[in-house]
Image (cartoon, rainbow, N blue to C red; front, side, top):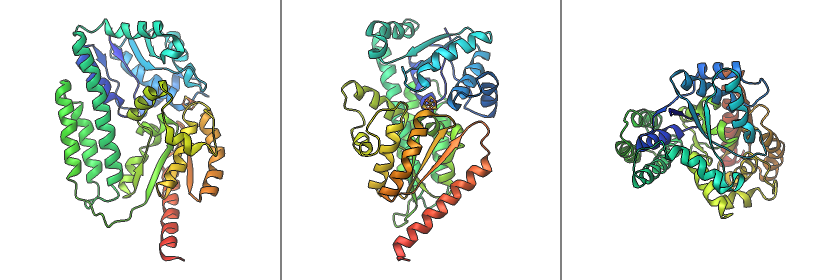
Length: 365
Ligand code: SF4
């Protein structure tokens, strides 16, 4: 068995650490790029959402390198994500790649027995002892918490850094250094070192940069390639950005969901505008917009792929949120045809408007 997995933000770092720790053979697809997208688009249904297409590109790139098993997390809906694994499995079979899929779904949806069967498929391929397997899983968890923490601090501190570009440079070298090693323990130490280095970046606390929340469809906001690296762009502009949805947030949310204790703040904040679960992270998007206002951020950018059902609902509610909370929100819709220059123009225009608004509030004009 040679496993592979689709890219989703920083999860490749944790997955690498996990499979290295378990001693399971794996192929990590190249980081998402134009060829991944072109490959995915050429085999996917035209009307399916962008994450599906990029994931197909990931699988095909890994299959070329010898992968024969795909591991993904699943969901039983209600948006298209609930159908992803079935559709992807059939699509790959139809084009001559009948690879195995191990779909890690919620045990409440597929039953405890089936859930354990699927975990067993991975478990039995590892030659490590049970204690080593647990250690490998815990290390992967630690890694995702560390890298998400480093990333979110770097995105925020970029607005305060004295030497423009330092946070971005550090974040990029952290990501490239950590995947150079196949030793999970060393990888954790690399992440810890970078965590310390980040704390030493000189900042000017007297600055008052723009602060923006990135909200919207989880894949699109987490996976930099699909949002045309918006957080990198904001770092270049010296803007602080904040994103609640991360892989480590997802893990925590999934565990707490079992006890109905997940996203309490977000649910409270979204209650007035969207009190129901509508699939995807539509409710989270609304809750985060309200929370961003409460946290005195200057504005929010919602990003989602063309045709994303839950986010279309959120988009229709956000103008009301924006009006009632007096909080600027811009929506960006992306697909494989999105051109970078128009996209950048919209971001810059939004930032200009926020700057003007901020100085009007400060100087009362
Ligand atoms: S949340 Fe949106 S983009 Fe993601 S799978 Fe569902 S419909 Fe597609």
